[in-house]
Image (cartoon, rainbow over all chains, first blue to last red; front, side, top):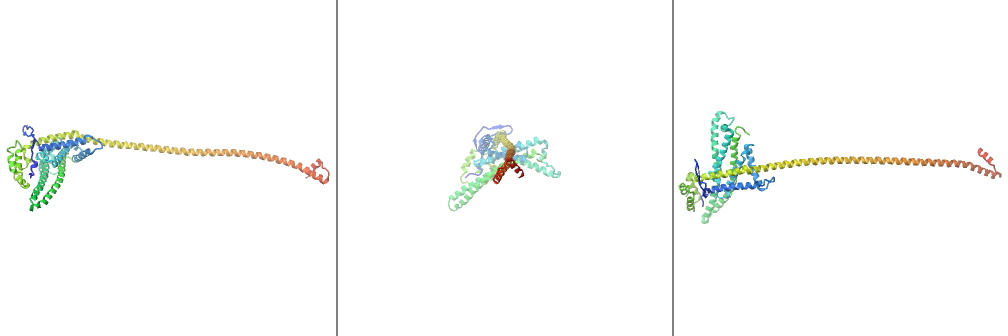
Length: 261
Length: 205
């Protein structure tokens, strides 16, 4: 029976030439199962939206309807959190949401989940936080310190509040990366473990005698796998959504710094 | 088994997993899930395949490339298309609404025009009826007057004739009376009466 961690291992599919980035080191650009999953997710999104938006009909067809539903959902999200300036960041948030959603969902159909790789989730989180920092410094300059000094708080409280705010800001990329990574990792491990129980308890029952008691256990595990799979679909959507919402919230902090819209 | 795998991997990190794969395949039979997991955890952070850092660089670069492609596609192609569709739809609805309003106003104006036409026609008809009635009564009065005049003329003429006849009859009566009286006298007396006598008698009578 397979090791529940086996599904997270990376294999090379096509070995492409390495290249060196000065100051960083040599990067192995091999096309792995992880990059395959990412590429499939990206190609799926691009293909779907190319089809959904190809006609641009005033009265939408089915595909266009689904595309517009996703578009409006995230569009409303960004404008409700960031305000009228949310439109500028909408393509980023929408791409982030769809890419994570596609990688999560693909993980439930294929054998590999790209978002269960910390390298992937950490990159997405770092990208988001970098964007937040760049936007923040471009728009607010030196006023960025206000992020850690909430208005209307007395000075003796600020001594306490500012370090907390600063640490929580530093932890944002970490939590962003670990939340998605942990959810995907945990879900897929649990699925694999329960599926493993079905097989091992079934083997036990095949031995006859007392081992026959394994049959109800195996059935229970199978039910667990089905229920967990349903739950994982919910988690796949929810984690993509949470990532998008948090990206919006963090962007809002720096876009509307010091004034509430 | 996991211990074997991961102790081996730092050694042949550059050429990837095939060795680890082989180790797996060798130790894969009959190890219950729980034991394997425990072994993996016992080893600490190195137990997770996610922490094989030799694959991080490739994954990060691939992810950034794919994300950049997707971002450009969305920012340049898909989102503008969606916005264009939304704008066209809003425009179409606004156009249809204003068109409907215009048509409604037109219909109202037409209904108003028709109503005034009907009112006018009704008034015309009423006038026509009144005219016809007045004309008819005029004519009737005229005919009646003409007939009255004719009739009274006839009556007058008849009266004149009757008067003439009566006068004539009255003159005749005198003659007849004298004649009768003379004939009666002649019968009684047996001698004829002269005309002068008769005349005298008539005057007496």
